[in-house]
Length: 134
Image (cartoon, rainbow, N blue to C red; front, side, top):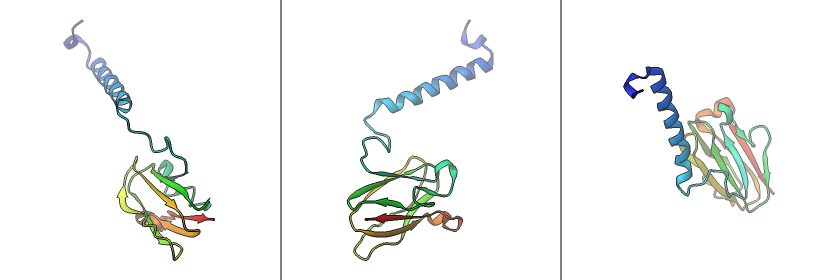
C-alpha cells in the first residue's frame, strides 16, 4: 500500500513515532550530561511537580558542610534564585535571571552560616528556602 492510500490517522501515528524516536536519539548523540550526572554534591529541585518550592530548602533547610557544591535544577518554568540573606563574609550571587525547565546552576558554599534565598516571581506564594552551612 502506498503512503497516499493510508488513512490520515495512520500517517499521523507514524509521524509521531518518528518524532519520538528522533528526540530519544538526539540525547545519545552528544557529550552533554544530564544535570544530575557526574555531580558529587547536593541537588535542589526548583519548582518540582509545578509546585512553588525548592526541594530541599523550602520545608526544611538544606544542611551541608563548608566546601559542598549545590546544584539547582529547574523542574518547571519561570523561576530564579535570589539571595536575600547570607553571612557577612560570603559572596553568593544566586541566579537572578528567570530560567525554565532543564536549566541548572551550581555554587560551592565555603563560608559557614545561614543563607536565605527566594524565587522572586513566587516569593509571595512561599517559594523561599534556607541553606545552613556548617
